[in-house]
Image (cartoon, rainbow, N blue to C red; front, side):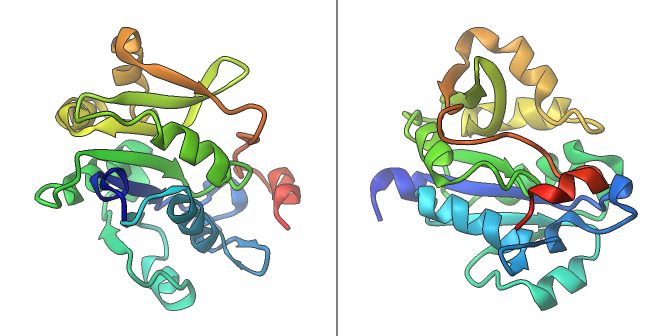
Length: 199
């Protein structure tokens, strides 16, 4: 494990209940024969995150039973229905005392974003002040790298489904955008039509 791999922890937000998918938890949607949450963990590990924290909410017990998440730290989010902001707060909170100096945050419902894009954003890590995000044709997207100096500020502003949007906008001058449009497709699995993206 390189020093960078030890200092940057993968943080996967996988608590969503799939409201627009008829209440099908996103973590358990099938992709290439396995639950989507497994695929997303593998992306973070392949990109270079030796440690991965997974925030669970909707159908958390079923996710634990059906998905192989060996070696991951599973973080419960009892407030998952309040939106992605609550998952981001729970995930960052789980990193306290872990020795991590940065978190590479990804979303479970973006299977078009693979290890290449995640590794590019991870490579932007320098220290606990680092702040970087993938960009797609210049538009900010996921994954996002938050150095630990930013965690308290992100947690304080992460509400509803906006996650860290307000914080990133406020700190735009410090944000490094890492173009990934040539190696990834940032679609979300939100609606029944989007299920066509899964294999």
